[in-house]
Structures are given as C-alpha cells and as structure tokens.
Amino acid sequence: MNGKDLDVAIVGAGVGGLYAIHRLRKSGFRVRAFEAADGIGGTWYWNRYPGCRCDVESMEYSYSFSNDLQQEWRWPERYGTQPAILSYVNHVADRFDLRRDIELNTRIRSAHFDSGTGLWTLEAENTETGAVRSVRASHCIMATGNLSTPRTPGYPGLESFRGRWYHTGLWPHEGVDFTGLRVGIIGTGSSGVQSIPLIARHARHLHVFQRTANFSLPARNEPMREEKESRHKSEYEQRRRAAYSTPFGIAGYPPPDRSALDVPEEERNRIYEAKWQEGGSISFLYSFNDLLVNREANETACEFVRNKIRQTVKDPKTAELLCPNDHPIGTKRLILDTDYYETYNRDNVTLVDARSAPIREILPGGLRTDEADYELDAIVFATGFDAMTGAMKEIDIRTDRGAAIGEKWADGPQTYLGITIAGFPNLFMVTGPQSPGVKSQMILSCEQHVDWIANCLEHLRAEGLGVIEPEEAAEQAWVQHNNEVADSTLYPLANSWYVGANIPGKPRIFMPYVGGVDRYKQRCDAVAANGYEGFRTAG
Ligand SMILES: Cc1cc2nc3c(=O)[nH]c(=O)nc-3n(C[C@H](O)[C@H](O)[C@H](O)COP(=O)(O)OP(=O)(O)OC[C@H]3O[C@@H](n4cnc5c(N)ncnc54)[C@H](O)[C@@H]3O)c2cc1C
Figure (cartoon, rainbow, N blue to C red):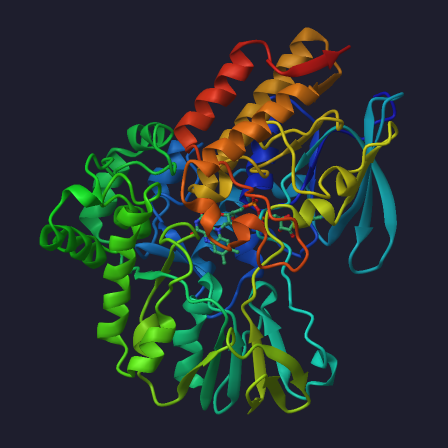
C-alpha cells in the first residue's frame, strides 16, 4: 500500500462527496469521506432556517445516476424543502450503503502533498474530542461546497447582546421559537427572503435590515401534481441527458430566440406576466435571448418586476426601497419566494434602509444604525457565506514544493476547469471556482465533476500513472477564458457573492464560469478525449 490508507480521500459529505463515494467505489478505489458535521447532506444539513427551500424544481434537483432511484423517489412538492431534501439525501446514503465510508464529526484542517511519496497527508480533527490524526491518500477530492462557510459581519458589540442570535447557515436543529419576540433580520439575499415571511408570522415585530434590494420572483410552489410527476418520470433519462446540452443544466425550457427589444412593450409585458404566473427563475430569464447580455433589454425585465413590487407593497416608500436598482436582474442568483413582498404589508414588519444608515454596532438590547437604535430580543444574520473559495482556504493546503492555496488564491482563485489547480498534484475539486457549479442545477454539476474525476483516475490507473497536475499555461488560458466569457455578459456588473462582494477585503474576481453547462461539459469531455490535454502526468 505504499504507506497509504486510501486511494482517494474525500472532504465533505454533501451531495457531491456522497456521489464521489459511490462512483469511485464502483471503479474499485478505496475511498473515505470526512465530514465536519455530525450528519450528511451539507447545505441541507446546515441550513435549517424557516422557509429553506430549493429554487430548482424537485424533479430536477436530484441525482440522475440511478434510474431506479429517480423512478421510485416521490417528491411531495414542486420545490423541495430543506427537510425533504435532507431526508432524500439520507435515503440515498442508506440505499447505496455509503455510510460505512463516511467519518462524521471530522474536520480536515490541513492537506499536505509530498512529492517523494506521491501522497497527500490530511490532518483530521475529531470535532467532539479535538483528537487529531493523519490520513494518507494518493488523491484528494475537495467536495467542501461553495456555500458552506457562513459569515457573520464583524459588528462591534455582538458578544454583549443579551438576546439570542443566529446565522441562517448554522441554524439550531431544535428550531427557534420567535413567538412574541422583537426580531431583527440582517440581509435580504435568498436566505433572508425565504425566512422573512415565516419569522414575521410569529415575531411580535420584525425589523428587516436591508443593505441591497434583490430581485425575487414568486416560486408558485404547490403539491406535486401526479400527472406532472408521471410525465417527468417517463421522460427522466432523456431529460437528464438533454440537461447537459443546456446552459443551466436543466432541460425543458426551449431557448428563446427573440430580443426583448424586438417586441412591442405590451406584448413583452404579456410574456413577462405569463412567466411571473408560471413561477421559477429560468423560465423568467428565458423570456428573451438577451436579458443577460444587453443592459437595455435587461432593464425591461427589471422594470416589470419593480412594477410588481409597487403593486404588491401598499406603502409606497417601502415599495420603492424594495425595488432593486443597482444590478441587472439575473446577475445575482434570482431568488424565488413565497409571499415575500406581501409580508411588508403586515403591521408587525418594518423595512430599514441599512445602506443609507448602516448598522454601526450591536447593543446589549438591540442594534444601532447611523440613524436610530432598535430594541431586539433576537437577531438573525442572513448574511451568507464566504462563497466558492471560503471552505478551501480554511484548509491549509500546501505541497513540499512550496505551493500553498492561501498564497496562490490571494488575489482570487485560479483553476483549470474549476476541477484542478496548477501546483497541486492529484488534488480535485467538485464544482470549484471557474466551473459553472453555482450557475447550474448543482446536483447535475456535482455528478458531472465526479464522473470526470473518476474517469481520470481510471485512466491513470490503466496507464500506470501515479501523478496528474494541470500545466500552468492551461490554467492561465482557462482563467482568461473564464474572465472573457464573464465580461461578455452583464454578470460582473452586480456586487454579488459571485465576485466576493459580501466579504470585506475579498478580492473582486468573477468566480463562476458563465459560458453554460453545455459548453463547459463539451470542453471537459474534449480535454479527457485528447489524453488529458493541459495536464502533465508522471509514473
Ligand atoms: C440555502 C441554500 C439554498 C440552495 N439552493 C439551491 C438550489 O435551489 N439549487 C441548487 O442547484 N443549489 C442550491 N444551493 C447550492 C447547494 O450548496 C448545492 O446545490 C449542493 O447542495 C452542494 O453540494 P456540495 O456537496 O457540493 O456542497 P455542500 O452541500 O456545501 O457540502 C459540503 C460539505 O463539506 C463539509 N466540509 C467543508 N469543509 C470541510 C472540512 N475542512 N472538513 C470536513 N468537512 C468539510 C461541510 O460541512 C459540508 O457538509 C443552495 C445552497 C444554499 C446554502
């Protein structure tokens, strides 16, 4: 065994890590996954805030690797709730006997590569006892997640707060009872928008502190319709295949062929209205073919949604404050909601403009902005994550040749295909930066990455090769391509977590690949077909 414990060490047991166990075991590799939490499921384990729900329809947001699984599983609603998705993930782990290769309560603190032995040594800390041990593996897969490092803003005084505070991404398992409490929620991204209507139902008063207004569309969630489910199931395999030929990895939305500017205003608004009634984000963004590339076209969609907000929210000042005006629609992940804007018509909900009067400090009895003090019994931070690079950078990843991930990515991530990193042999990422991961149906992207990695490892084994690493030039070309594609769209105009804008001091780099799942998969397949073009290998 050359002193190694494993062929492949997998860090993380979310949907990506779980599939990696299954797929690599099938190829005969000795694998083990290490997970910091005391349960599996990643995102769906951690994010237990009220209203947490998937924004991709449940028939799509599921694994495709087993037709039996996708035929048998029954989703109760159009969009999966966090508990429904977590129970699905646990079912998958049991059904495919994954648990025997998962170590829970185990945080990987460091991963060091030694070129002499060709092995990665991982330092694994038991999160309950603090005991640390080493694990040696030939290859390492970081399935650590893009949205798995919650960040709470460093307001002074938080430690003095007498009430309870929560982060949506670290929600208590026993739930939180807000009945009769004065609650403040900070942040109006996806987690804020999903939880605000539900918290408002119980709180005595809810103050929503908004720095940036975001676009949200109605989800139109509903119980799963039987005819829809059976039609989908009868077409499942074709639909899954077709999904790889679409930009977002979701089939069933015919690509639009008209510009928003080629259509008279009345007809344009009729089209937007139909999409608004249908619910869902892709459908809306597919109203016209230039919404993400032409500012003027995009503005027509922005104004349609702003008018919806103005029609829904009774207080004109609150409505105007809720109207996003600092980014084109769709350039941040579009939020889907249930009764978000309607919630501002409740007497017990107040929207506070935290842009014109920023939050200055947390007080023992509430919080202070530049304008006023607010008395609060509980604070909810819906402030998001150190997205895409946070979890990787929390691990001390380095090699004996002097490469260290913290230094390499100091000015932003550099990767080849979002899967590998020059200078770090035998290291792979699932949906890393510069892959379309977060711009797609992510289970599909996890499966595509893991399949690509598994095929690569099978190739190395067949060729008797021990080491693979991307060439610097291939990586630079990929980074440049990534930037060029982003610059040809409106995406970089938004101050979003795609550019790290929610984390003070984080370099402003556009991180996801927005050329589409279709183009991206073709490129990954071509790299493999051309004998792992752009990689150097050794025995
Ligand atoms: C609130 C929310 C809603 C979302 N909704 C959607 C949606 O509608 N559609 C969609 O496609 N995607 C959505 N996503 C994205 C979601 O993250 C992915 O769909 C998917 O769950 C990612 O799976 P993963 O395995 O890659 O990562 P994760 O689920 O994040 O799992 C990573 C795991 O790695 C573990 N880990 C990290 N670092 C270490 C370490 N050093 N040692 C040990 N373990 C570690 C973490 O604890 C975590 O369990 C959402 C994300 C959030 C946060």
